[in-house]
Image (cartoon, rainbow, N blue to C red; front, side, top):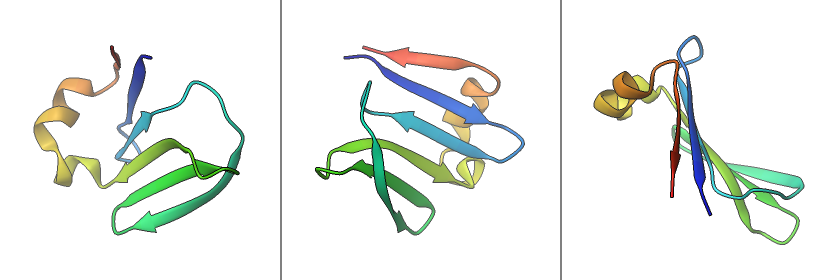
Length: 70
């Protein structure tokens, strides 16, 4: 499974896609991190808000790019 990581520079949000498919059911906010789950509680993706403050070196390298981790 490959994970997709995207950075939205305007919103300063880093999104990490953890599942290739699934229907979004609910989300939980944990400070500056929002985790999104399907109806069975499987983690689909997470968003890191204020990403440039939390992980500045990663954000700089990902700005306007998409990275796939295998």
